[in-house]
Length: 146
Image 1: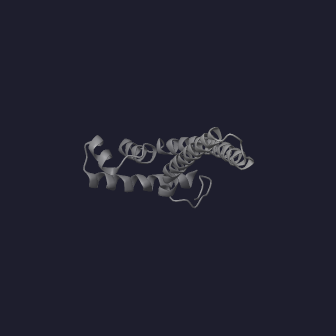
Image 2: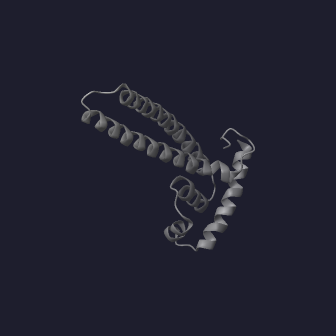
Image 3: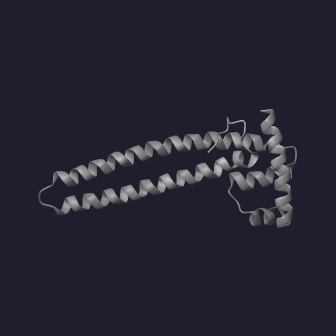
């Protein structure tokens, strides 16, 4: 995926980075949870055995190392997510139109569906999409200037 610093990025790609990063974070959290469950399963096997085998100790050690690696990766992703989300929010707040700002914030920072945004803003679904298109044009201009 293109990064914030890439000058050829579209407004939609730029704003969509928040959602993409959030999905990556959720995936990593799920993976850590799965590995922890696996580690609990391995330790349960160890408790039932009279003699600990080196194979199950190795499995446990490998799983713990993998969990540690994934936790570090998650920490890094979260730091990057905070940086990107802050930058995107800063850009959204540069818009001159409050409706544009609300739509983009709700869609890209709060991950709301178009229908929810329309309902909250008391405007039609089609009008939300039209305003979204106009807001993207303004974001493109802001990105060109920065």
